[in-house]
Length: 473
Length: 150
Image (tube, rainbow over all chains, first blue to last red; front, side, top):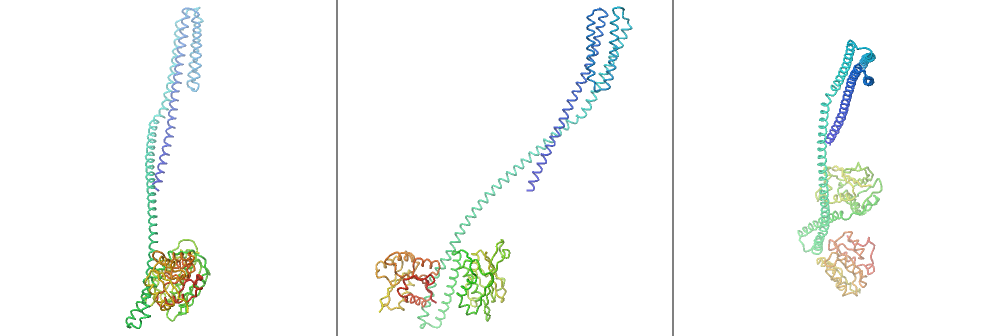
């Protein structure tokens, strides 16, 4: 993820760079074009001034030749032409004045030129005036020529200055813009590189995202498949479990039949044929009878255990002391014989599957009586409280639970066995000392599981035992 | 002098039939009681069809039998007008509450869970047969439905 994010960041940076490069590229291009436009307009301007200067000079020359024509021919046509040329000269000077209005030095040059031209025109007009009356002397012509030279020198000076200015300006522009093309090319290459980098970045990103997408789809598909597989497995497991349960039920049920026969026939022999039997035979028969009875109990308990899965009834709120009373009534004989006392304390009601909870209490109380210390009448205390979910071992939720503690003052057991005692057929004592099937506490645990509850046991050897039941409120 | 008790037993298990018959013989002489044994439900219905009237004193009926089981027989007996008044005592291995409830609902009069000793069997049979006709033909409350002698 981090790699992905940094890649996206890179692409952003690249695009940002490309945008900056392109922007500067356009700014430089704009400046360059602007400079070119400026220098071309400067060139234009200079050329215009030069042209006007040439025109002025040629117009004066025109005027000069018309004046000469008039002096030679005394024809008024030349005079008209002469006047016209003078007008053109004036116009030309006006235009030059306009064109050089922003240049002080050219303006002053222009003033000088105007003075010279004025001098020349005055000279020419004097000649035209004098021509009909006298011969024009060579000195005067030489003087005219000298003025013309001065004018030419002045226009040349102006032309040169204009050319110099042009070169100066053009030079500064070219200096400004010589590095522009290189820089532009550099910027262009940079932006192209940036764009290429961005292109590859994006392509890479797209590939990654496509790959991730297809991987995701694949793993989704895998998950769906796995889910289907699990569901199938679950179904078949549930089916197998059901079959197993009914197998246990049916087999233990059917096992009762031949066993009952054995018991009945043994009882038949011991009752009616006892006179004909040797002491040995009687002894064997008694042992057989005991064995058959043990098997009977085993089958009965197994049957009860397997039936717990089949007969699950709804939970109802019920008085704890009422159930205890019912159980005490059932166990009346044992209780009286052992001089046991049962005390119920705490919250009066619990939420239970009544028939199963009765069985559970029967097992716990008869255990308490069975595993009592010799010469120490069993005292059984049943205490009911409500506790929060976090006090329930093995539970992680928030719901409240009834905590029913069933404690006795019997022989207890080593706490290392506290989980093993709930397993089927696990016994801690020899059958002779404490007869039993090893199913009683397994039944208790199963019943608690049917209630969605939890059970733990606490004990120390010879310190009594406490069974703690947690039942959902 | 009391009339001969006509008692029917229907059970596919020949051992049980033998034990039952021996026990009955020890309680009543041949003149006092006569036992008719059928080994499945179909045979029971045939015998009933042939011999009734007069109806038997009581029918001891096993539940788990081939061809026609005890529940089917019970239903059929209760639905046949000439048989419907005959007391039926279920005589089964099972002590499963479901089965007991079902028998009660089908209209059986009493329920005996086959005892584990001969003496107990004899006691139980004697106890049931000691009921007078009226007590036997009435269905008791559910609590007294199962006959269980210690």
